Every structure is written in structure tokens, then in C-alpha cells.
Image (cartoon, rainbow, N blue to C red; front, side, top):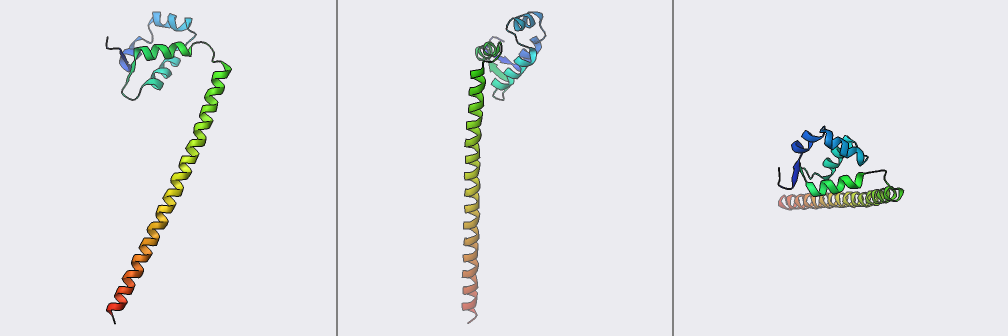
Length: 121
């Protein structure tokens, strides 16, 4: 469309184009590789920047180097550990909040009971 962005409609309409297919084969890419790349880059609005998409497509070409795969695995493990720590912290905070609420309710009930007992005297 000339705006520097590629919509899903624009992209999917040219996936079967013979020129694109030939170009993809020279880069050792398959149609599903480009479809996956589009969805990875898309932030949910159905569009990706053309330059960003082309850069990503060129990075996909050929087999991934072992060091790149190792780096992705390391990053995934690191993020998994951080996520577990965050979830544990949220869980502990939630338990603490519930305990504080229970104690507050118990104190309020005790206060009400004492007030009622004093009023009955």
C-alpha cells in the first residue's frame, strides 16, 4: 500500500506468487516460515513494518547456527526462572493479603462482640 507497512491481507495475497516463491527458495525459506515470522512480528494490529519484516526474513534463511539456538534456549530458561520467581512472589503476597484480611475481620468481630456485651450491661 506504500505506507511502509504490510497488512496480513496484503501479505497473504502474495504468498502464492511465483516470484515470491522463487525468492523464498533462494533464501531456503518455506511459506509457513514467512507466515510464522509475520505473526511473531505483528503486535496484534494485523500489520508489520516492511523493513522489519524483510530483516526478519533474511535472518531466517538457512539453518540456525548452534550458538544462536543455544542463546535462545538460555534466554528461555532465564525467563522461565524469572517467571517462576514472580509467580511465587505474587502467591506469597496474595497469602499475606488474605491473612491480613482474616485478622482484620477477626478483630472487627471481636470489637463488635465486646461492644454488644457492654451495651447489654
